[in-house]
Image (cartoon, rainbow, N blue to C red; front, top):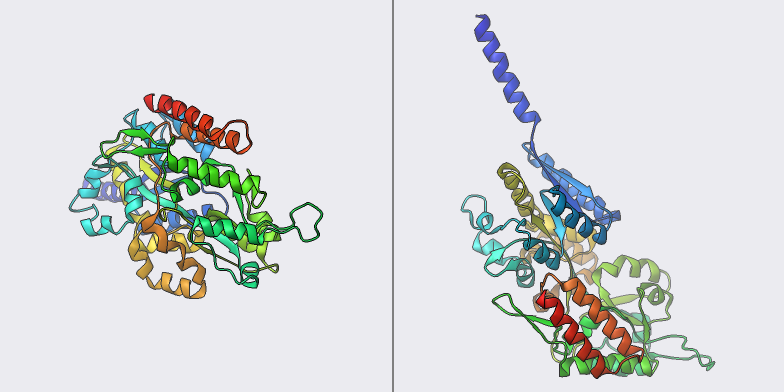
Length: 419
């Protein structure tokens, strides 16, 4: 009898222990502030819905800190199970053979995504997560570049937002004013930043590329082209004629103050634009102007899994990845943070439809997702970006001619790709 009771007690204890010890996966991220709070809500919901699974979200601080910590953890063998990562980070980590190929999970008939579910993810985001015929990431926080404009100023002058680069130039000439004729511009029509990202917005709009990614995963340097010459000539013209504010820092503050009537930035600037413009002027956003084709670039990261964790943790990690990109969750993430939903079907949810009825501006950027441009993914993309930024500033501020800048950038980028 005692043996029977003891056996029953042991069985109960074993069952209790099983329920008390869910499989835990660590997830590193760089989402601070309100974005971090929203991510914490999602992690809490996942953990509540899955008693045998636990995601432990760890805030690293910022993207630079996260990248450095990941690279250091490769050397010390202390990687987490999951992490946010830009595509070029993933490319760099792939050289160490530590990123989990998600294709077997994706195609698993029991726990994977159907063909329809995978194709429900916007095609540019699929591309950003795919290397060759293998998927190594799931899209997460994605934003797109748009054209912000002061509707009070534009309406007063009877102007629509520019659709082409010629329109933008004309508006810059019309709306840039020195109201008291003291030789100082009181309001610029437009502003742009002297960064590789803003250069990319113009370059892609003129039909150019910095680097072209072939289907076989090789890369061709494209920066020394007629499209790039047009881009630099246009950007330099706006600066030299003093009809655009050109600076390195963010432009939401001067836009809010009214000293700049329009600028280009990702939709992530929306809360800053709203707070800076409140009580001063109204605003709206639309697609970036273009010359050859509408080709707005994306910003944001994916989430990757590391193959260094045990199989039982990989199963939990995969379930969390599916959770993050599910229609309801990506809709919630978008409504709370301003990032675009990564699934097309999110736009058909009742939550999204109610949201855009309350805030019609939110419906505008998603119209351009299918036409967006995803950056190439060489592992030296960060170094290439630095090269382009240096070239841009040296050309804009007359240290180099356009030809000198392009020849130098082409040589540097070829060297980086050779690595």
